Image 1 (cartoon, rainbow, N blue to C red):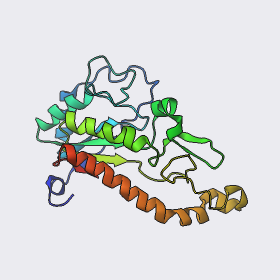
Image 2 (cartoon, one colour):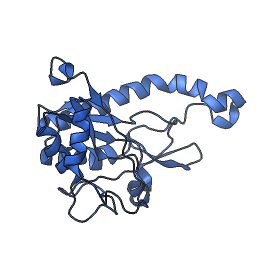
Image 3 (cartoon, rainbow, N blue to C red):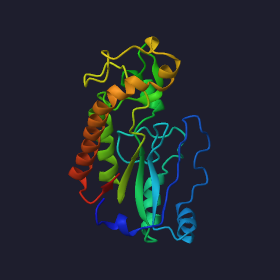
Image 4 (cartoon, rainbow, N blue to C red):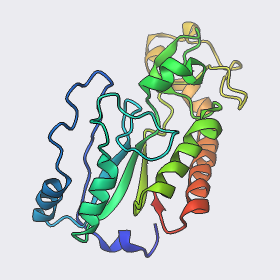
Length: 227
C-alpha cells in the first residue's frame, strides 16, 4: 500500500459482519452515528465496513450486481451511512469483501462452486477460477467503488480451501494428480502430495486474480487502496 494514508493510520479496527440469509431482524436498530461515536471513542483511525459478507450478501442499496440481504430493512443503506458517519469523524473506511462463500451464488450458479474429485460442491465456496470472476465478481467490485466513497478494499478468503475439480475453462481441475482414494489416511487428511504439486500453479493463479481485482478497482478510482 506504499506511502499512503494506510501507513500512517496505526489504529485500525476490523469487524466481521457475516449474516446468513435466514437472519431475521437484521439491523433493525442500526444507528450509524451512534456506531461511529463508539468507534471514535476507541481512538481508531480506520475501520472495516462490510461490502459483501461471508454468506454472500451485501448491505447497501445502489447498483444491481450485489445480492442484497433479504432482511435488510427497506431503504437502509448501511454502507453509505457508515461512510458518511466515519468520514465525518476523520475515520477512514476500508470496504470488507469476502471472496469465497455465497449462499445466493450457490443457489443460482452451482456451476461456479468449488467441487471435490467426485464432483460434490464444497459447501457454498465459490471457485475464483470459474467464470464467476469476470462475469460477476469484478463487476460487483466496480459497483462498490463507483457508488461508495470507500478509502480501501480488503479481500478476504482468496485461498484454495480444497483442490478444486470443477469444470472451469481456466484449468481448475487437476486430473493428472493422484486421486484422493489412492492416498493413505494422513495424505487424504492433509492432501499433502497433491497440494505440493498444485501450489505453484495456485500461487500464479491467485496473483492473476489479485491483479484483476486491483486493475478493476483502479480503472474506477485509482485512489482506492486494496489488500
